[in-house]
Each structure stands twice: as C-alpha cells, then as structure tokens.
Amino acid sequence: MEFIAQNMAPIMFASLIIFMLIGYPVAFSLAANGLLFFFIGVLLSPYSGGSINLAWPLLHALPDNFYGSRVMSNDTLLAIPFFTFMGIVLERSGMAEDLLDTIGQLFGPIRGGLAYAVIFVGALLAATTGVVAASVIAMGLISLPIMLRYGYDRRVASGVIAASGTLAQIIPPSLVLIVLADQLGRSVGDMYAGALIPGLVLTGLYTMYIVIMSIVRPKSMPALPLEARTLGHGVLSLLFAVLATVVVSYAAYRYLAPSQGQNADILGATIGVVLIYVVAIADQRLNINMMSRLAQQVIIVLIPPLALIFLVLGTIFLGIATPTEGGAMGAVGALIMAAMKGRLSLDVIKQALASTTRLSSFVLFILIGARVFSLTFYGVNGHIWVEHLLTSLPGGEVGFLIGVNILVFLLAFFLDFFELAFIIVPLLAPAADKLGIDLIWFGVLLGVNMQTSFMHPPFGFALFYLRSVAARVPYLDRLTGKQIAPVTTGQIYWGAVPFVCIQVIMIGLTIAFPQMVMHYKGTPVDPGTIDYQVPETPSLSPLGAPPADGGTAPTAPDLSQPPSFGEPPPAKPAAPASDLSQPPSFN
Image 1 (cartoon, one colour):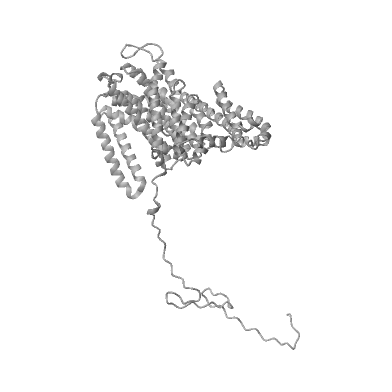
Image 2: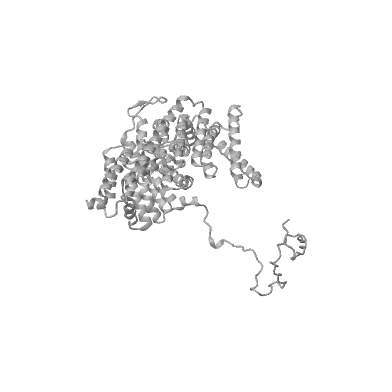
C-alpha cells in the first residue's frame, strides 16, 4: 500500500498510456483515469507520507474548472471555431483550385514546377485556413491527378502534397499554436510572431529538397509540356507589373510618411496592391491586353488570399485585433470571397458549420477530460515528479530540449496534436520555465515537433487524408485517355519519410538558432546606452546658514496672525469697554 501510495504519479501516467493504447477515446480515457485515481488516492492518502493531497471536497473544484476561464469562458479558444469555419468555407470557394492551376502554369516550364506550386499554395492555404485536412484534401484532389498525368514519381508527388498540407500546423493562424499558447499561458499574438520565421524556413527546406531531387532525379518530376500551358507565356509582363507595384507603393509611402508615421509603409503597400489589382481586372474585362494572360491571372488569383492573410495576421501583428477578432474577420472575409466567386450557398454554410461544430466539440471534450486528469495528477504531486524527472536530464537546457523532443516525437506516432497539447504540454511547461527556457520558443519548438504527428507512417493523419482521395484502382485520364496506375499506400508512406526527416532537421535548427523565434520580443535594449538626464535643482544650504545663492533668508511667518491670501485682512472693530460695576446684561 505504501509503495503504491508513494508512487501514485508514475502509476497514473502509465495507466493513461495503457487506456489509450487499448483504444478508448482520449477524452473519456483522461476523465475516467482522473476519477478512478482520485478515488484510489483518497483511500491511500494516509499511507502516502504526505505525497497525496486529495480529499472528497476537492471535487467541488471541477465545476469551476469547467465553467471558469480554463474551458467554457476561455476567450483564446474561441478563435478555433472561427479559423476552422474560415478554412472550410475557403476550401468550398474553389480558392485552392484556382491557386494550384495558376501557380502550376507559372512554374510549369521548369522541372518540378508542379511540386513548387504545391509547396507555394500549401503555404498560402496554411496562412489562410490553418486546417491541415482542408489543405491536404484539396491539393490531393486537384494536384495529384495532374502530377500523375505528366509523369511525376508517385512517392515524390504524394510526399510533397502531404508535407505541404502540414504547413498549416506551424504557419499562423495555426490551430495548434492557439492551443499551445493557451496551455503555456502566453499570448497567441506572440506565439504567431515567433512561429512565422520557422514556418517560412521549413517551406524553404521543402523547396530545397525539390531542387535537389530535380537535379539528382530529373525524370521523377518533368516540366509541364507546352500543350498543357494554357495561359501561355508572359513572365516579363508579370515582373513589370510587380515592379510597377513597388514603385507606386514607394511613392505612396513617401507621400504619406509625414502625416501617417509608422503606418505609412503599410498604407503605401496597400495602395500599390489595390491599384495593380484594379488594373488587372480592368485589363481582363475590357480586353485592353496591356498585360499577358498569365500576369492577369496570377494577379487576380493571388491578391485576394494575400489580402485575407493581411486581414487576419496583419491586424493581429499590428495590435489592431486580438486573435479571436482576427479569426472573426477572417471568417467574414472567407464568406465574401466565396460569394464573389459564386460558390456561397446555404449548403456550403451548413457543411462548414457542421464541421466546425464537430472539431470544436472534439477539442472541448478533450480539454474537459484533461482538467479532470490534471486535478488528480496535481493532487498526487505528479507535476513535481515530472519536473524532477525532466530537470535531472544530463546536458542542462539543451539536454532537456533534446529529451523532450524525442519524447514528443515518439508519442506523436500514437497521439494527435490536440491530445499532445492538452496532456503533455501542461506537464512539460513548469520544468521548462524552471530551467529558464522562454515558453514562446518552447511552444514553437513543440509545434514544429507536433507537425510530424501528421506525417508519421503508419498513423499520420495527413497520410490518411491523402489516402482517402488518391486513386486506389487504375483509371483513364480524362484528357490524355491513357490508363493511370493507382497510388499504393506504401508509396504514400515512403514519400512521407524524406519530409519527416526535414521536419526533424527543422527541430534541430530551431534549437540551434533560437533567434528565429525570439525576435518576437523586438530589438533588445542595451542598458549601457541609456542616457539619464536629471533636471537641475537649486542647491540647498545647511540648516541655519545663509542661502547658497547669496540672497537673503526668508522671514519667518508670524503664526499669531491669520494667513494672508493676497488681500489685506478687514480691520477688526474695537470691543466696547465693559462696566464691571453693573450686573451683566444678556439683551
């Protein structure tokens, strides 16, 4: 009894792992585990030597945990349904299809052009939707048949689609970053600012891999044939349009700088982009043909999602809106974009609301189960056990980060990123804080690591999403009439392996170069460069000595008289003399 009571925390944690491996739903496994060990802990408390702090009245704290600021009244988590709704509406609006077609035409003449287009569009979808499933399914339905049609290697094609979809995990407005910020007790805006550069660097690493593969194995990713480039040529026209936009933006900035100050650069860029967008639409509608068809299409297709990104992320980074408000504006912007494309209908709104409700309920139930589990786990001093276990790892801060990332990487084979965020992160955060690790850096590092949970064979969700839309049997291509072989599950898994390795490299880069994340704090101030200016004051003379400036000492006030406020006091009438020989009169 004493051994079980004094080792309740590791037994409870191991039991939770067994519960989940058996296959019980995570939310109910957490809640059941917490309640079961609460009952056991209360009974074994006398044998624990003070290591168990559980009593029946402690259950009264559960309603406050559910309805307090941690779950039902949590404004931070309110951003999740907004961003989910925005992503699903954008998926139905056809934005991904237009982007993939246009960017594929732009990069088509070079080897691996379709792969570059998938990575670029994956990053754009990540910055507008923040939902992995929407990105992977959309690109799998649109890009995979085209890549197979023109002879792409199936492993490369499936790997780049699955990996590009997972960029929604780390590029803001990522849902996992919202959850991590909430669990770490930090600002979502700071988490977004810290994750931006690592997300762009990871996108660059994916692109570098395609560059290397196009050189080493050029036949695995051929260029788009001439007959498939329906938009024709026109890159020079596009470059000229970009140059004109830069010139107009700079001129507007110089004009607005005296009156608008720090906002002049953003306003100038907005003017330049809006102007070139209006010119491209007018050129297309009026058949002026001032631009090439390629330049027109790229400008018309790219600027609306970029404007939506600015509406969401720009307002958050500038401090104009909170993440929840930014998500609400993004949802409205997605509805407007779908309406402009003629894709907005009651059926689309119903599907988006149903999917949003399903995901939000999933997150909510996991969070409620996690609160039940943490109440008991903290009551048996589990947080102290985890803290001692992790802070005693060799290597100090670096050893802790390496050990934690190995643990999360292995758990990601079995757990979803929401489950990792709600179960593991609250246990790791106190140890990281005690070691002096910045929690925003720690959160971004865990976000990059949790991204691998979507790519792990055989349980990665991105692989499941791609498997659900990839061809399972041979089919006839609708354009060429040729029979296309199916994509096997093994090809999808092997295609994901190089990108999992790239994600592991990104984890190492984030540990080695923390400034990629720490820039969110701004430029550090050197205390040695601060110049303190103390205003001069007249010197004071010692008590009883004449003034230091040679003047005359002030005359001491006459305290026997009433104070004077600048006007002479009225004359006091003389009192009449009293005749003391007569009795006093009271009339």
